[in-house]
Picture 1: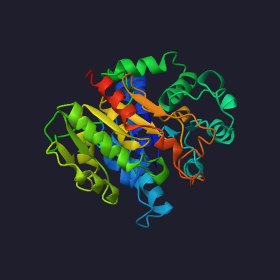
Picture 2: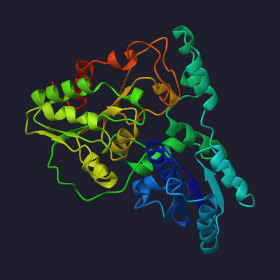
Picture 3: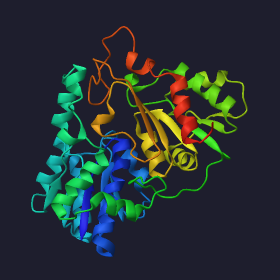
Length: 351
């Protein structure tokens, strides 16, 4: 059985689909061959995953055309005929791919777009409470997909089977490959202050205050992970403490993954970094502002914590991209550093 998994983006969503990889391996066994199709920038996330035989990258940013992509798939299909296309993206782009290979059986996942759209449009708190898992199925995304597989493949214990196969320390369903250690000696806590969109970011001064307090309350180092364009992270350099290590812009994706994999705890916004950490069995504290944990994209391990405020204007969009119309960024500002610290110390079992 050769299955082509399709998930072009984003970073966190690609990581979440490793739960799908684990379930398919548990269900089909040794006869399964998996190829993962994603955007070129995310290939390094899973190019050495033990459950994936081949990863195909699609680089639209560098001018790669659709014809170039289909050539790669044609060559793959000639070498090892594809038995099933599993569309985990469910967009027009992935629909076009399924149509291009209409002779190959295909399945697509239900991303609950309609439910998420309604949740962003209902601004009365009492009504929003109706949007729970029992009514709309807005559970963790990884569990939703596995439960869908349960119906499709006739497996009556999809989530439990994956947990048993994965055997993660916190019952997480996702996984990433082991990496060589990066040059940070532990123990340490990771702070990931960035996010794909500005309005998903907790205020940088709140992160700085949290970092200072963590250094005071624990004996652990605090490591900052962010991209080369996240210059706002230079605010951490004002902390005069040798246990503060600011690696903003100094690591590539693989190096960041290696650092996250050996951390005691990861604290960050609703972004891919915490999903990477949890795939390594690292508990997370995740801060939700304009988006909502009920969308299903919160970390799912049994030691991870989600912090989110209930406001009449929230969620304002399904991705957090929409500009805030209020005079202040209340959904993020109302999450206090002390609240985040309390959650962190509880996970670390520090009184």
